[in-house]
Length: 294
Length: 153
Image (cartoon, rainbow over all chains, first blue to last red):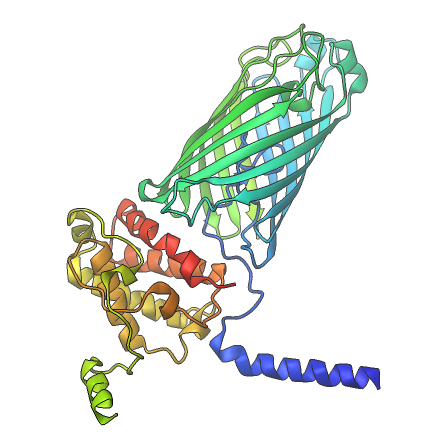
């Protein structure tokens, strides 16, 4: 009896939906954001530039759906190689949940540092981001940017080495606030992020150190120029803590070009300068990322 | 009654279906015009905008993502009012005689993704007319805030 009533209710609901269908666009269709407007994926897995988190939510879905992105990133430096595999889910353009798995290969430098040739640091980053206000893309009549807050919890693999070089923790949590604005009439996208972090070299060398063991405020800035609906070029800057006595840590800079090869595929190439890493200076090289978003 | 029907018929441009009367104002266009006429020239003035609007409507009607929205709509009126709106916003000096954005899209149940599809089609139409990318973005920047009036869910 109960199921019959349910079936009749469901049946009539379906019938009225079908009757209404011609006046409405298809429900639940995929996508909706404009190309490149959800950025690319940071090495930490969240939507943003390559090294700076942005206020945008990963994936191409709007407030009507659940989207996401997956990415593979390679940073090839003179003495080290960083790879990062990232995945993110964007829920109703409001909440982003992300994950990244990084591998930092010391190659020959590992032997020079006494770690052993090819010694590898690893890190997992679990992220969450909440869009608070604003719409970076559509609110073109307001100066209010899109503002989001986020958290990134990091877990590294080499606790013993980290402790030996003065790192205080092998786990750490960053919190950040980002503001992103597209000034469409100029084709210019701007982002600023303030991050509270203890991370040494992105967290790969642990959190806190012999010089300082508390969160400090760091800045991430990005500027990008749209050259076509499919191509953006720009630059980023990221300050980092300098907690470890054995090796000074520098700010990171990159110059990038992001090209939407396809609606669901973005290729980014950048020249990245990560400064000195673990006493090895001049770590400038190529950043390449392939990202698929849906 | 007969007079009202006659007045309405006289007001309705040829080929268009009558609409309920509404106060006419350029404020209905939903954006202020740009200064000067350089953008208007970049769009190829009236002939260029006419081709862009015709192409935009044709692309929308053929776009499986949003074609259903245009079924049963008065496309003759849509083309005319869009041309007026673009001309007004681009500094072409036209008067906009259409309804405001909220009234024009009432009960359509439009979603954010519909605006996204529309913008992509407009970009394609502007590209076909060789409107420089920077000029395209200046029009899109004027249209983008209308999302708040147009998208209802």
